Amino acid sequence: MEVAILLLLALACLALFGKKSKKKESGKTKTLKGRTCSNGRKVIRRNSIPFWKERGWLRKKEELHGYYRVNHRAYEGKIRNPFSERPRFYILKPPEEILQGPHGVCFVPRGKNVYWIHISPKPESLNVGIKSVENCLSETV
Image 1: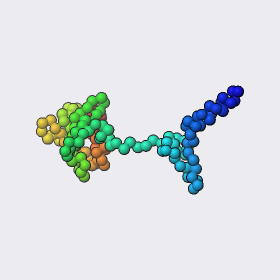
Image 2: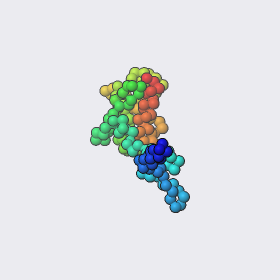
Image 3: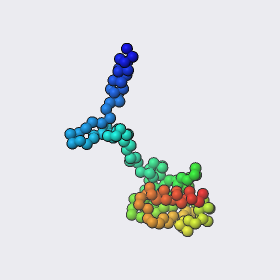
Image 4: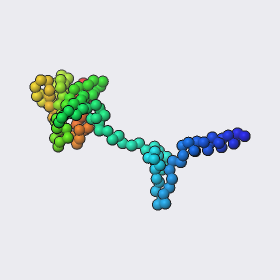
């Protein structure tokens, strides 16, 4: 009786979760519905949302507006010409520590508490540029 119950439970689990993968004729493993690999591990799909969108940066004409987030603090910023070859990163009212610290020369005043941020080498993408500014801030504040 107990064996029959265990067998029914095993069949129910198999029906519920199905087989993880099946072999193609070529010997390669085919992933079913993109959920598992041949070794039984789950497939984790890369996030297709860009980092800047995920972080809440908003597009306004030819600029992105958002916040550089560091150590539970947020510093308002903007990126001009974000989708060009040379986007320009800005921060509004940066903390005094950053201006007086080793990266202070990278923050060039542009008036009205707006600072252009010189990033070298040129960031590969907007995401890398935002992360570079956040790393620079996190080293100082």
